[in-house]
Amino acid sequence: HPKKIWTFMADLFAIVLGLLAITGLFVLKGKKGITGRGAWLTIAGIAIPVLFLILYL
Image (cartoon, rainbow, N blue to C red; front, side, top):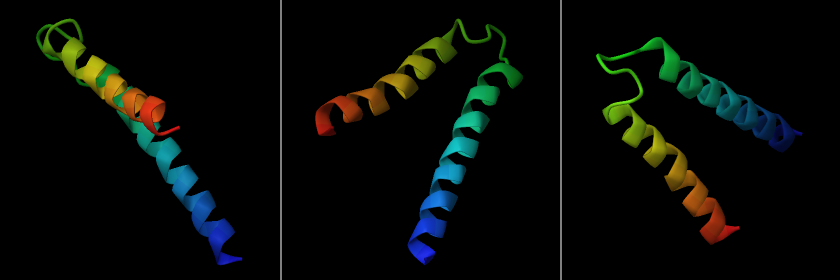
């Protein structure tokens, strides 16, 4: 069943991308870390997908 395999691969890829994004918050610190411009980018990066989930689910 190729559909099940591709669904599994897509889910696995999404999990890996999520882990990459989360670890990127802590690995690459700038001068101010996450408290400067990074805080606004982090809020936007969380708010946009949540907004789409609220609107379309």
